[in-house]
Length: 359
Image 1 (cartoon, rainbow, N blue to C red):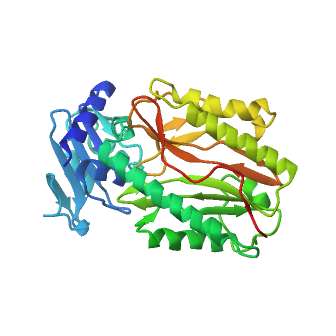
Image 2 (cartoon, rainbow, N blue to C red):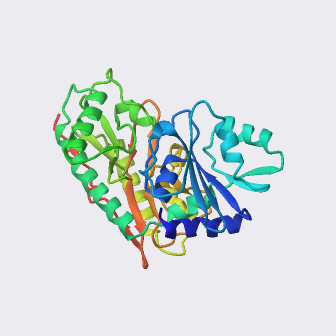
């Protein structure tokens, strides 16, 4: 059990005015206990109390006895798991993880009418938002491996290959570099499909001359995610493609340049978005500028117009502006940044210059 992290969570609980918190997100449970548990449909809960007492509630099927360094209460499928947990809770408000299934929350409310559930995830989200030196080291290395892998994918692109061919190439190359998983399913898309920011790679679309290619990929290394996007072109791009690419490159640069301690994340979004809006493409930038990243690919904070977090050392998030022209093409350039004491460390080194693949 990581007592320093527990103390950070307890401080967040005090800010929320809660004396007990149930953590159920597997990533957050790992963050606090050092143990990855995938519960499926069964109940998993890590109880944190304001006095520092903690306990993990888990099914015996997970075989945790003797394998976790935290107090453990086990149950099996013949028992009422919620009743087992409820017996150790006190009346009043209790913070509930935003990911805890409603089937458990509702049963808890029915069994203990004096308990008042409130969303308590921010106590853990804020603790996880600030990475320590070891976490940053892992993220730097994860991104370095991602850099190498995306270069291998770009080198392997050729006319006629499907989007899924590209995605499978990424997975092979990432695994060869020691990745233990993918941050998300690789997003490789061509031509008009690039105008869909989260297009799922398919086996039908084939790469052809004139296509833009968006490669949005990330791998997991020592539990930490990477995430990066580059856009390249097969053959000589059109004047419009060149113009849009340059705008997105400048927006990415402006967003990264805005990152430093004390700057609200909404200002990072503003810096990137302004470049695109001033050029008349504002309505084609249809998503936020970035998201936090760490044990999960999408974490707090939300780097958007409405983001309320303020940049502080240890925060890691993406800067990923894009322009998407329906039916034509799209461009996105994404890098991860880590806020330092006097600015930001960019975790990706792959060139952002316009790149053309011979086709």
